[in-house]
Length: 487
Image (cartoon, rainbow, N blue to C red):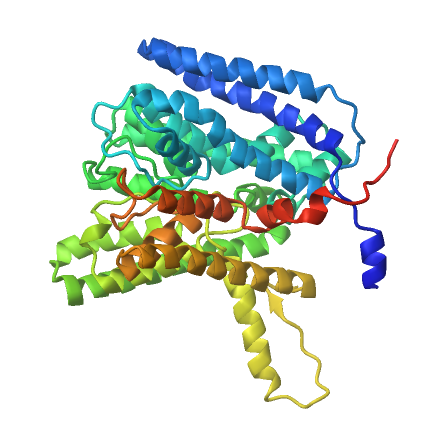
């Protein structure tokens, strides 16, 4: 069997990668036109010129490679390589216009990675005096990073069929509907767009000025967390904070669920379970953080009732907004938020983490192991979740992904501790980056050593694509070996 698998293994074909990478570059060029137009509106001509260079470069690269002849079938490893390349290439390209805001290359790259992975950590010392285009571009990158460049491409550019199927390598194919992968992507795009429009109108209606409402809505629906002000949500009214938190919650639920509840109720069982899981986990985290604040931080009841739910929901949805600096939190509250950021929201949502559904799958397996100790030896019992039998492959994938997240966090945490940073704060920061949450214990700053900034960038990229795609990209057999021939 192992020998057969070796013989059937194929490396990626470069014409395939180049052709569809070119198509993705054309989509990215179109997306980059939006901040270019905004820079013209704001009269920031220096930034306009930089965005114009980026758009022309992307368009030239895209047109040059998208015309290549390539087979109609895309292998799974080719799809994963394409997705990983785009999430690495996008922040590299966007560094150039971001550097016009006074950032070094590394800080601009950190900001761009944080944006496109919907994390929200920032190495910029202050947003006071920052160009309006810079603020808009960060939120805009979070918006299209939350949906995913590939999902946008599947919905708008990539033709249906084997190509679309091959590119659906992350969460697009986790709930593929009868209409096909491209139809599924278009449904998700429509839902995402509707949530965004509703978010902008609602945020403006609760008293936030129009430009800020636009940025908060982009960052909330994508569970990104980039705010246009240094104090995140602190300056907003309680009503505005509550509305933005609700938007973050809406983004952390599987987006296709909003379609299913009206059209395919039977198929919504798993996603309804995810909705309940995110809500229950957020409430439990709120109660736990509130209790920790009362016992350890000696905060008054009104402060606890206000701050604890906002922070807990922000961590569980991996949105990263905050109404108070996390540096002021007690150790117990930080630990609770660490667990929330690591678990994250629902599969098929814009949230990060290793996802609550996988936690429930692991719990179902462990429950089955315990239950079997009470049953006769020949009794047959199957792991089930939401009235659905769990397949062995699903269970293995879920447990492996949880393990990989823990390994990445552990390996990233050690250098921070070795360089003298607080163990708890270091763990908080690393989990926030890997879970693409964006809450900070105060470690991420312009003065953070370059090595540690690089580690956080790797964590954000790893967490956004759930690690596997990066392992496939780094696997030598992905690039070297026999290649499939197809006419």
